[in-house]
Image: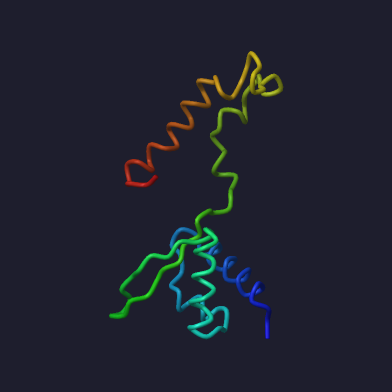
Length: 124
């Protein structure tokens, strides 16, 4: 019988791999080859640790939960348009220096632009 921590780790990997669409809790149990009781305990434990979030969902006439990771893995797409990537002053840029990420207008503008789509769709 696998250790509980191994199942938690596998469960978290599965939830992360499902990305933004998440996974129904009973589908997670099936992938883990775990009982519904064991699967529920693992999901609750991951939620208490702050690794996933559970949202109640009516699926085919029955209430279940959809599990989402709280953090998606970073991709190159997430920084591809960052002005720092092509900045000619990148080697001189340090916190507290004359050129700093804290006072960089280009970086600030880019960060605000990243937040705009989230606000438009009601995200945080």
